[in-house]
Image 1 (tube, rainbow, N blue to C red):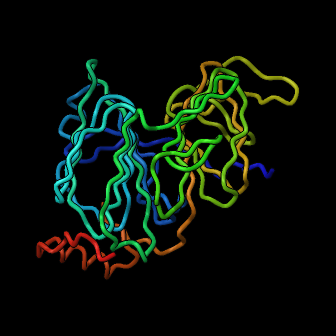
Image 2 (image 1 turned 90 degrees about the vertical axis):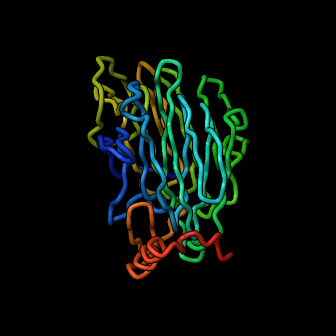
Length: 304
């Protein structure tokens, strides 16, 4: 097994999107596209409804896939093709925008006003950018969970892990998307595809990934001895950890445990041209998309 070293660590940045939704951007809109095939990730969580209730009104998507994963509250969604639905706690929506779709997402809190979820954007290769739009709406009860002997719990959204396969399928990047919960002071080795682009996003508790440089986050007094890690400085809430190549990730949770997303996918390695929620390969393709929006020809329902 080849251990994956940490390539970089960073903290999610507060920002606003939609009609004034307060959220944290984990990564995105970066010309270097370091997380290829993933383009952007947002962590939207808040206990104050006035900071999220106006949601994300109608907006276009083309050339990408959007993945929404809800932990608390709900998200009502609809699109220009007539699809409608509500994502509840634990639910996932994997939307392939393809040739173009108009879409809206309106969050609502739980009884305590809490809203928490993530949206990840995955790129489509040039050959699939104009494919037909499609949805995969997965209820939380249909997301398999495996529990290890030490109490580690893993929800598998897509990909194959510990003998289980996630319900989302037919995705170009052949991704692995896991929600991992670890008990306090637990060490795990997690296997991933050797050359897939891989990152972890810590959103609860704290922990450290072996050989992580300059960990970010909370400070604790406990120190592990011998070959254990010094965890005086643990990576904590809203920390992105991006890995180099290798087929194994080593992680240790802190004294309060840790919960994180582990995501990997095959890099596309193609040029990326951005125009907000429209992502193509060239500027000319972006201009064509803008013309389509202006002329009312954006919705094509795909050519594949």
